[in-house]
Length: 66
Image (cartoon, rainbow, N blue to C red; front, side, top):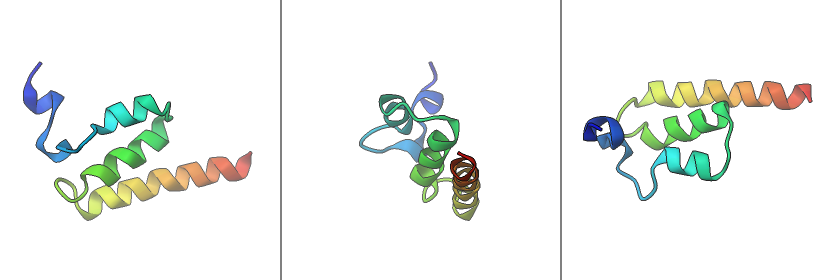
């Protein structure tokens, strides 16, 4: 597999977000929060923080329903 796909520069961390997400059995929204928070400084900046917030809002809405 292409190194840019498997280990993109914006995920050069101690643990890859996908490994953390899988190891902790996180759902789609939780995983996306981790992904966007992990990469915002190297890739998406404020856009990634806004995306993370959107997924947190989904989680809050779902939590309040239950």
